[in-house]
Amino acid sequence: MKKKWAAAAISAALFLCTGAGAYAGANLQEIKAYLNSGIKIKVDGKPVKLQDAQGNPVIPITYNNTTYLPVRAVSDALKIAVDWDGSTSTVLLGEKVDGVSIDTGEQLSIHTTLDPTFTTYNGKNYKAAITYQGNDSIVLYPKKKYQKLYLQIAAIDKDVDIEFKDSDTFRTLKETTTIKANSGLNTIEVDIGGIDTIWAGVTAKEGGTFFIPLTTSYYK
Image (tube, rainbow, N blue to C red; front, side, top):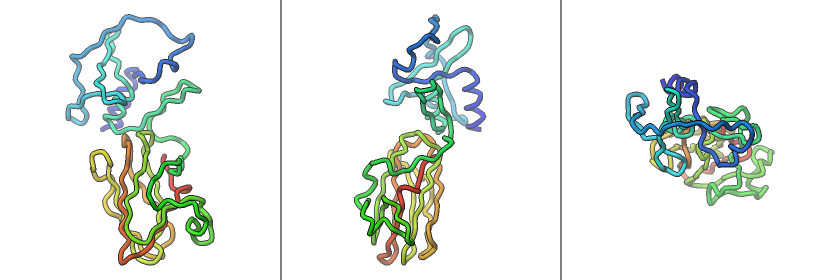
């Protein structure tokens, strides 16, 4: 239902709320349009309020009997990733073609390490990893740019449980997954469309050790 709603909205000619620099150029045409605060929006039957990236309300525009909706606000309401490629003046909706490593320089956990002694697993050095003997809380920052998270994790000696929540609302994104000891690297797929920050709770049973390579875990 959400995908069909998004397609209909896009076909109605949406516009992206970007910086002023993105609009410079010869493609601009001045028009006379109207802010139409009388239009209400529902997603799957539930009323929603359209907001910009700062949380400010945005109002649909009516021009020549056609209603134009802000694509970023609509994408957030539908939990669909949206981005802007300034080099090609292109709005990017949904999954990106290539994955992006979660190793973006952010401090994801206090147990993040670059030490080859701890970033090496089964003879391969992953350069950056989160590894710990015990429980840990991990914070990831997709910043509403992606649809999927593919997180790799290994349980070294004991079973490990991991769960994912929206850090802002604490809504469950994926129920607890149990990683069996000595089962190698497991890849967990999580739907993260429209999510800004993710909390992942790792519980290593009986003092076990887990290993999460950051360079091969990615967003898409």
